[in-house]
Length: 249
Image 1 (cartoon, helix red, strand yellow):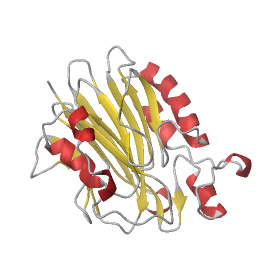
Image 2 (spheres, rainbow, N blue to C red):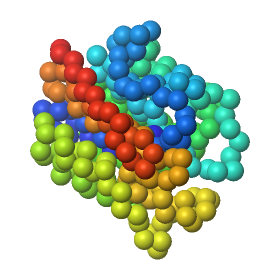
Image 3 (cartoon, rainbow, N blue to C red):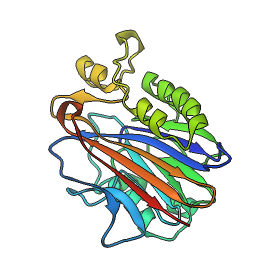
C-alpha cells in the first residue's frame, strides 16, 4: 500500500473514512477484497504470497492499514508487514496494546494505522513513537505520517473537500485516480533512480510490471455500518473489477 488518507472523527455522520491505493508488482498473487473464510469478521484483500493484507476492517469496526517505508538498500525483515494488519484484524486487543507489543525489529520499514472504534493509533519502526491520533485528516505514503510529499499533500487537500460530498464516494475515487507526475523540482529523494521517483510521484501509479493494483474507499457510518468498495486494476491501470461490501449494525 503506497497511499492512505484517513478522516478520523471529522465528519459528524461518518467517523471513519479511508481512501487508499495499493501499489504492488502485478506478478504478486492477490485475492480481491471479501470476507475471509478463516476469519469471517474480516473484510480485506489478501496477499497470497505471504498471507497478510495491506488494508482491512471488521464488521465491528476494527481497522488496520500498512505502508512500507521506501529504503532501497535496507535489509529485509524476517516477517511480512502484512502480518501486522492481519494480527490486529483477527485479534481482540486494543489498538494501543497492539502497537505497544510489536517486535519492531522483525519487520522491514513500515507505517501502521490501527483503530478499534474508540481510538486510532499510528506507529512506525523508522523513528516515530506510537501516537494516538486526535480527530483530523491524516495521510501516509512511503515515509512517516503526514510527510509533505507532493502527492500526499494533494490527496489530503482533495480528501477534505470530498468528505463534504459523502455518502457519495466518487469524489474519493477521483482523488485516487489522479495519475499526474510531479515536476522534478518537487520530487523527494528516496534513494531510487530518478525515472522511478517520477513514476511513483503520482497518486495512481503506472509503471512496467508495477503500479496501482487496487483503489479502496471505506466509509463507516455513525450507526456502525460499513461500506467497503474496492476497484482492481491490471497493467497500465486497466480496470479489472469492482466490488462493494456492506454491513449493517
